[in-house]
Length: 278
Image (tube, rainbow, N blue to C red; front, side, top):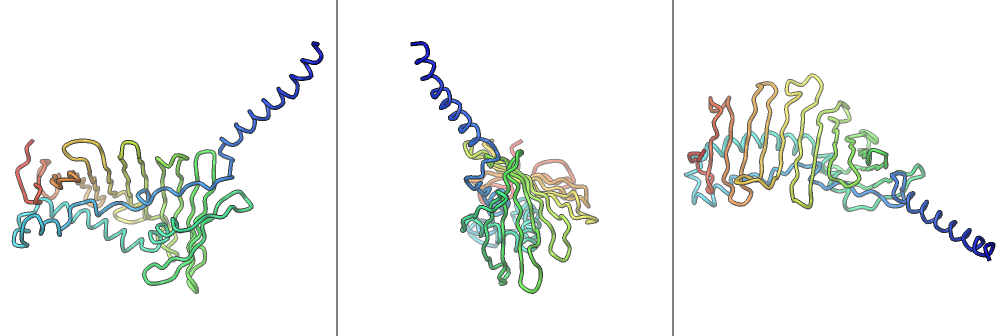
């Protein structure tokens, strides 16, 4: 009887060990059976549309003649607009390639990596893009290679590293195929459960007078202001703080160089200048 029981236990133990090993291997970073998800667009493209616009000034102030009374909001808009122009104009190709990647399915490569291959039109010109993802122990490594016919072939325009949950990561953007130097460092965090996120652009262009300058944008659960920009101008050694309410669009700005003091300067729901409460 003891021998029969022992014979029954042997295959049972083998099954338990097999199940245990199978479960462990599918949870490891080397598992490439499923392609990693691309981090959301908000991890690469800063939301400049979240800041109150001039159209809202006209709508809420009932006429363009009152715009001159919006100096506090206006100065904040100018500071944000400088970075918006830099991203919109200077990074049109890599941004277009990133946005288009979500419309395509990846293919598993022989080395275990995944590649999204497609064509994208940027600045009126057709480009070929290849987004490569490699699962590493520390997270997912991303590389975007872009080609333009008769101009350049598979230029590494940006690379990045994200964690497996896509709650944090970085991107490094290179200037262009003619000047393949790093120009922009992006650091991002997101908490979908709390609906909070932040993203930071830093100028890392070698020998640039604004190297070290940055813009930092975030959405929080704080009150009374749940959105912010922090902008540092390296050449002026000046820090600008901007905070506003995403719903009511009232907010405030602090800029020692511009206003001549460290105080806050506020605007109301019509974006008109008002005295700050504090």
